[in-house]
Length: 113
Length: 116
Image (cartoon, rainbow over all chains, first blue to last red; front, side, top):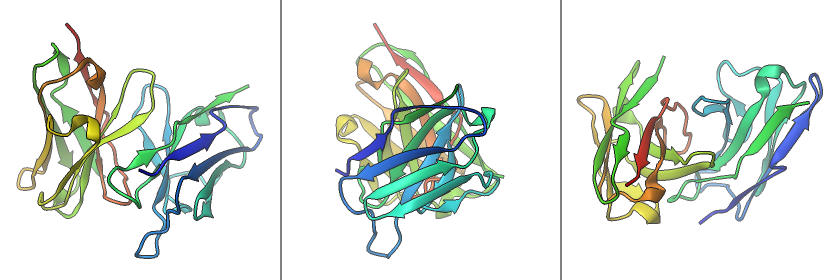
């Protein structure tokens, strides 16, 4: 199984400051079709997860452009250029290249200082 | 806009069964693989089961193999999870989600509590 490791697990950030979350996979996430199936999800308190990014860097429709994804192979990053109050919550990476199982990172809690 | 609505959760004793449903609206799910993903209280996300667009193949996390069955009715735009021989550790919010590699839309979840 592919192990997804996120860091940090807790990220206090001041409003207007940037934030960055790392996600590393135990093996390359490049698929046989050439795509890399790495997703990022945001889960606000009391809500279900919402996809922000798919295939490493493609932003979901309606997601603010302050969110961006990057990376390749086994090393991926979610960046928030300027954190807003509504960005507080949990963030998960998930790989969908090597299945089953589909696997998630442990989650990173973003809190506003 | 796609909407997924789960139902069927509740409180059940260990060893008993529950059947979860996921109703899709806003699009037909018959072109999409579908998943069940769960989240235990205060814990992270765990993939549980997946089914091909036509129902011909199903996949499960090891901990539920032989106890859970994922199925779908594309004519009714529905996804199901039959959960048998439930254990305390199966207690979680269960979400359905659309997409195979690009797992996208999620429902709001339904809470399953297994307790004596």
